[in-house]
Length: 95
Image (tube, rainbow, N blue to C red; front, side):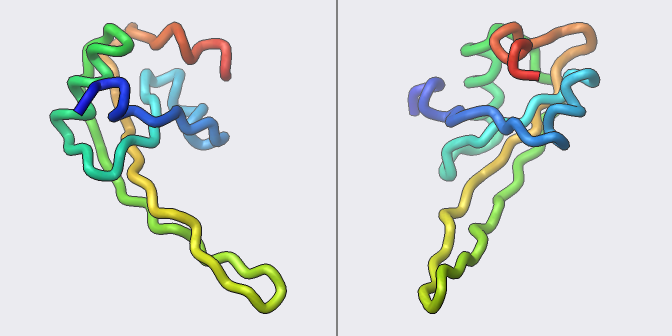
């Protein structure tokens, strides 16, 4: 899998942005990606050193609109901890 296809997008929630000061970044990643693929993709795409990596499967929420029901798609989330003092420059303007 191409490293640019592994990382889908950064998570820009309030909780995710509070970890940026501690060099923790949160990304949505491809659902079939494993730890080594995510680690290699982050290191290659952003040019940083990954110290710790946590993955979590996020179940899709059930939504209703009147009498109709649907389910949002499932996602996989990666919390990436970088070496102390390192930052991802491409995501600095988003905070």
